[in-house]
Amino acid sequence: MASGARDTLPLNIMRSRKADEVNRDISATADRFRQRYEGKEASVHGRKEETTTMVNEYYDLVTDFYEYGWGQNFHFAPAYSGETFYESLARHEFFLAYQAQFKPTDTVLDLGCGVGGPARNIVRFAGCNVMGVNNNEYQISRGRRHDTRLGMNSKINYVKTDFCDMCFGDNEYDGAYAIEATCHATDKVKCYSEVFRVIKPGSYFVLYEWCTTDKYDHSNEEHRRIRHGIELGDSLPDLETTHQVIKALEASGFIVEDSFDMVERFETGALKNTPWYGPLQGNYMTMSGLKATPLGRWVTNKMCRVLELFGVAPKGTYKATEILEEAAVNLVRGGELGIFTPSFFVKARKPLPGEKPQRKN
Image (cartoon, rainbow, N blue to C red):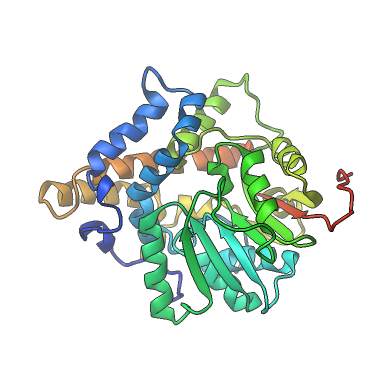
């Protein structure tokens, strides 16, 4: 089984989690989380004010389900025909390391590292050392457990810190990458400026960002509903456009050397491929594929309800699966309409001393 493979059963959900005693009551956490999006006082400003708490509570809710249904690499990737799910995720990650020119002597940052799946692949590909940045203690504990099992503790470390206010010195790291993580940032300029501060001059920050595309029409009610469903289901304060991401990087001091929508590149390319949201649609031919189908997610949801009633799973587990189902439905629809991309690629470089930042043509 691949190192990032899904668990056969969501056993972590059934175990007592000691990493974060504050949010043991999953039911109350799920209610608070939904209230920020659907309550009378719900607003983008309010979500941004509470981003750290909101995102932490979200990942306390969903990390076990992510590992059960997705594996250890919490992101999407379009896939070439004939490529397995995990091969597509690894290739997607290797592309970042290749673009950033990571070397065995480098120590690089993984912003929003999850449970370390991408970091382990980046280490295998580039041989570099990785410092995982994560503000969720439970995910860090899971990442360390996986690293120990795979003998990768000497190459990967973690620090609990906010990537909008990191606890590192200036010019400390040889580069940085982020895979569908900085979409959680309250302020993109503040987040990117922190990355700019802590990486060395001449080094690269490469990322995949969640964005609305040029096809998104805010006057279209269905588009707005899908966007809201993605924001709710994935704990995002506010989805931004690809143009806003570029402007934020340039405002932070970076030279943007390249940017494009990886999804669009696959869709318009000559090679046969399957869409990034395909795994959310699943297939009924294999057990792993069945879990990702609407039927499979429904079965998981009901199974969690039963486990909850018998006291095997924590109270509120069922509510967490409902939030994830809302995310899945809207991600698929956003992908089908082409109004959303999880893979807007940007290659940004910190200028050398005396070098003037130049706007990308």
